[in-house]
Every structure is written in C-alpha cells, then in structure tokens.
Length: 253
Image (cartoon, rainbow, N blue to C red):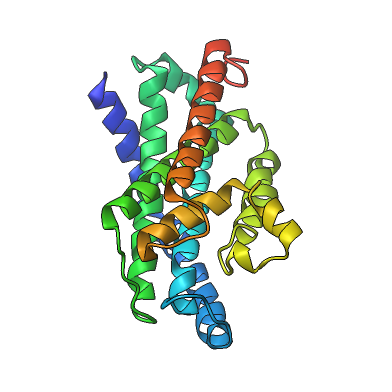
C-alpha cells in the first residue's frame, strides 16, 4: 500500500473541498435547513407521528441521509471527472499507485466531506428541536457506510461520464427523486397499500430507515435489512469498479 500516494490524493481532494466551502459545505447545509424550517416548523405542527417522536425530530435523519447521498456522490464524481476532462488522469494512472489506492483516495475524501456536512446539519437541527441519538455507534456506522457507498457510486459515474450533462443525469434524475420518495418527509406506512409495497423497491428507503432506527429505536424497516441493502449495493459498486479498471473502459480509451 502506497500510503504517501493515497494520502496525497486524499489531502488534495479535501483541499479542493475547503477551497470553496460555500459551495461544498454551506450550500447543502443551508438547503437542508430551509427544508427543515418549511417542513419541520411550518408544516410539522399539523402532522402527527406515532410514538413520542415529533415530526420535526422525525425528519432530521431523513434530511441528514439525503444530504449524505448527494454530497458524497457529487464530491466523488466531480473529483475524478475533472482529471479526465483536463487530461491529467493519465499522469495519475502512470504514477506508482494501484487502482485501489486511487479509488480509496477519492472515495474516502468524498465520504469525509459528506460526513462533515451531516454533522453540521445535525448540530444546526438542535437549534430547532432536541434530537437524541439512541444508538450513536450504529448511527455512525450507517452514516459512514452510506457516504462511502455513494462516494463509490459517484466515482463510477465520474469514470463513465464524458460530458457535464452525463455527469449530472444520475444526481438530478435518479438520486434526488428517489430521496424525496424514500421517506425523508413521511413514513412509508402512511402510504396506500400499493404504493407502500412499491416503496420497498427504493433502496434509499432502507438507508433512511436504518439511520432513523439508530436515532429513535423504531423504524419501518429492520436495521439488519437496511444494513444488508447498503452492503449489497457497496458490493455491486466494487464489482463494477473492478470491471472498469480491468478493461480500462472509459479510462484508457
């Protein structure tokens, strides 16, 4: 393991993140806070949630997860796309670095950025409502695995994209709609029977409910199932990356 090369990529990507903090850190935080004010404060008083959890508390894990998904995916996809766009990726590929070290450097830095945003969102939410975390270590595990998995997914998107339009297709037309339909602002138990069953085809439902369970101890989906879905998606991403690097598809051609 070339630790110097790995940490060089990691530090470079983290420096890129903090070079434009308004875009990378504060923009998603402000957007999420606006969601919280509108849905949590303005509308939340009219919506009841089962148990001792208020609606304002209920949406916090969903907002954190939605921010995690978008931030980690965007950081990893743009991080590897721009070296492709400028042609500097060939210098990276010719360096004494393995594909594993390159991948970990970009994805772990993207996951770190997403987790920083998630922590800030949680701290800000405390100014609006108390949000206890019943199982903090499980919450940390869900946050890290989700951020790392979607950073890996974003890394794949960045490798396969050859235009800015293709780079933004998945975040805009797939991830954002699935996040909103994944139970960020509502419980899937509130849906009619047909849509309730359809919702379980959305993998983000399991990620949101897994984090929600770690906060409140209850959720629509078992945390074991949620963890299994995340690990399964991570495994699929690893297989796709292995295939891309083995064939050199969209990298060496």
